[in-house]
Image (cartoon, rainbow, N blue to C red):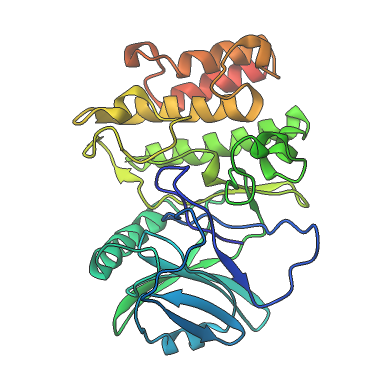
Length: 333
């Protein structure tokens, strides 16, 4: 399924209303496509309730969603993003899709709808340029009277950073948490996910793009079929690029490189080496505790990974391809 990404990971919690009864003890799998959430369940006074089929959601003002009917029956909605997007799970002729829409005023959005529309439009060519077997698939996009929509294939994966269901320590300790369950898979299965991460990001690099805001919240894992997809690449950019935001540059504090806190610093392949290395430590190590004692693979792989997260850029691998090559060499020893 789907959800919108958190701009800075701890910013919010998902609000999901489904058109069906969620079974007891069922953890709702979700799909990460881009955007953010806001904590809290309080309702704004100046809000309206909309209903599409059996699904209800809140907006700040009236908006026409008749255009959505062409994509099928709505079975879930994500309506409390502060990104300006509102997203729907739809089904038509047995096929499920995720529709992300900009143009309305979701309950927690404080910006301008036209800005949200522009951001979503800019994301579409990124998904097109970086289409890959390990990336969620964009299937269509349309302009409507007062907005813009991007349509993606549905993927039955669970986000490894499902903080709206398992916040704080619960992510690491609750047996129902996707991250907890992932960490309890065999190392071999987790290494296959790392291989997929390398596969996609070496391709990103070859297309002269740079990853932005890649972290474990960008990883979806299907525990039934042991498949993964990468999602939420909305902020990936053509390379070379620079940090044009400063300290609050997109990303998780657990995986951001030092340059992603500094205005004007380069955001490039060396940055991505750090990001991927930090994610690797989260998947088979101690995350921000990068001691070998927390590492679950062999020492050769550890030595490769620890170089990737050097604070000094000059000591890291110069490209994701070089990092991947060193990793594979250690893996095959």
